[in-house]
Image (cartoon, rainbow, N blue to C red; front, side, top):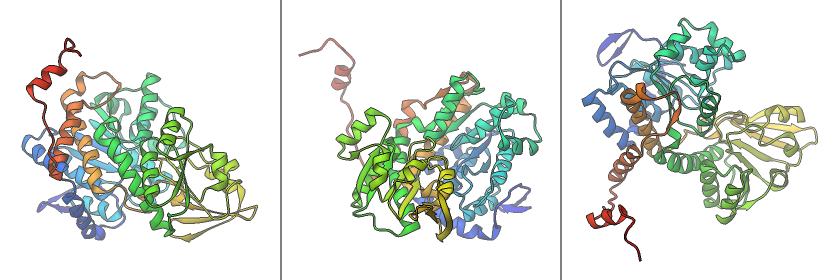
Length: 446
């Protein structure tokens, strides 16, 4: 029993220590002042209660910004259960603060794989009307259970279930997914015709990927590397694997700090873009010989493999900015090493059998969330506004949608962009009636 808004309520939660809550409240208040769009949406939600009676199970990084989103969803009338989307990204003080506010939160930093999937089971036990994912672990696990497939992690979930999975799936209105990695997974579910309910690819929204992926990932990744190592980026050869929007942001920020940036790619169009953007482009086997810092941002596995690690110089730094810890072949790194020790917080030294040292950051997990605080609040303002609006859209339209992957309508993107510009004090022009008429016809020419 805890106090929430002055009333005693029963709530289920599991966090590291409730005594950390006060520090968590400070962080949440700090984030809120830099998230004006989400605050405006919260005001709107508080008046109209568009999510009244809706249960939402969310697997997101448990950060101060996520707390602002959770508050917004609850203001709209939703019941929210929150679990992490990464075992090492939870901010324990924020989790404690949310628990104090009555949120069903099951998250603590340093969860084991079993702990993590036990938490995913709690998200399914909540019988959500809407699933909200950052990496697709709820939606994919739920579907594996429904299809009676999956590995050891699914068995962990199955042992902790006390609901009928078919009933959960059939009663679900829809889901949302915020990451590139997660959208790839869900599109494969759609392609294989196993997706059972509609999912909004929030990552496809322009006000998400053009800003969160590029500016958020760019800044927070370098922030995590610097906090973990305190190395000077200027003058270093920084190898960025992948030139999607996250890779572009990382490359841009690394160059801004004085690095000599090298891009590795498998997509010829993206490789050409990187070349025209002024970066060196080469295969990983060549970059491995000259790089000082390696950052993966591809969404694929084994981008840095044993064959590359053997070519690397003594003292290189390996970091990952992709959602899962699969982009660096950790098994190969362990096999090639004769010693391994923690030399700084979030920095493991691997001494290879050839005598060279390799420094792995954040256990190969998201370096920006494990070694730093994740994206700045200002950019998450737009990402989480998309999440909130996606939930509202599903509540209003979900029953009409087939089980496919959808993008949010462009007018919602524009709405969020206009609110953000307004909060920044930026004004823009409007089309005149003459201009609208000109754009609406094909008959006018030279």
